[in-house]
Length: 324
Image (tube, rainbow, N blue to C red):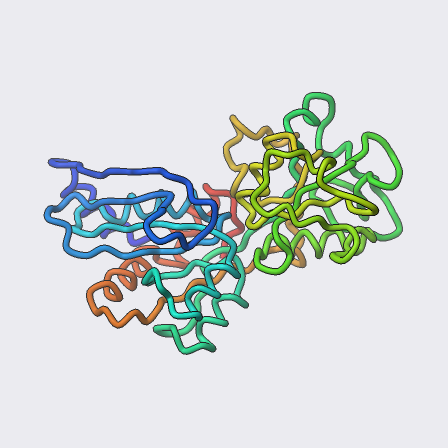
């Protein structure tokens, strides 16, 4: 991020810090005025308000970023989150919520916005996300995440710290991952990533193995599935994390950025998959909303990120993303 800009804004804001953070977590995004976070500048009156839609894995870093950005300004940043496909479809379908910046979890959904002619400029990469397999609290009470993988197999996936190849213990071995959670394989790029990891293990068949649990993160997956199903998919990766933390599944695939807090998520509770084949290449795009003031602020926010700089890479590292 632009360090001089940050310094000036911090100094200005010291005398009268009026930053307000309001949380009312949305089920999915966009949701009109149902923002999960609002960052309000320290200069009054507020002159320009923008809506930024982010992929669910980037929800918490985006809130921190917006909070820092508005210090010393008269701007307000409303944040909503959801699956990248849902957000992209809303923008290309008319952008009813006037989203001025979209931070997707992959390039494809950002490119869709460009293809539809809703963009201002080209899409840009801002982060590289790392998938992890996270155990539920109940499962972690008895085992560590690495225990749920057969190692040294003839085929499978690459996992950090484990001998190639690894296969999830579902069909054989104990402890057994009887049910797992994944993000939606159509709209959520971390669902795609889960598929890339599970496919060489022989565990990826969206027609027979997956049950679409949608937003139902409280009912045990085992009570929802039937036949050969043993994987429950949720609308976005934030809901996937909620299902895991609710013990609705044995474990599941989310982003490392979501479990970055080592106090809440000890490293033994998850296995990382940082091979380049599994990374989410996360792209953003500015949106043409026919409002010069809002477009200017959104572009200024992207400039403030200072993508590619040492400061931005430090921000990414601190939030458990791979550097650019």
